[in-house]
Amino acid sequence: MRKVWRLVKSVKFRDLNAEFTLVEFEDSRDRAKVVREGPWSFDKHLVLLKEFDSLIQISKLELVKAPFWVRIHDLPLIARNEYIGKLVGSALGEVLEVDLDKGEMELEEYMRVRVMLDISKPFLRWKRLNVGKGASCWVNFSYERLPDLCFFCGVLGHTLKDCEFTDPEKLDPTKLPYGQWLRASFLST
Image (cartoon, rainbow, N blue to C red):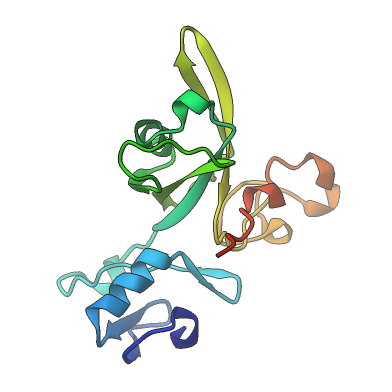
């Protein structure tokens, strides 16, 4: 992870048990960068990060939320603003940020919203949006840096072949409710 995170100063990894590792950053800016640029994955598995609380017992520690940049596609021009970004993003989870300067409108193909998602639940694929004067439309979502996701149940942590809710041998792969289209393509820099 040190190489992937491209840190300026050193970092220490200490195993707390078989599931959890404590990460100690020498520089608070490195820590902020790692938190800000996530989510991260290792070996196609999501790396969940949480601020350390020394009062909590390790056996009581739960990690079910992760921040993701979500792209909102097919928004009408009138709805490509910070207010709508927050409104639509709140249907997914806690909105952390809308990738727009205050008062700006998004004129690109999609709007980006950073949302804290509950990864124990199926990911949302689309949402109906009322845009005014009785008009409504469907907006689609794609997720940046999305690790392994089951294309049948929409939950992270396993793939279709390991899903407990279905037999992959009996499924038509063209009729799955989720697919590669949920993975956002890489941003060009």
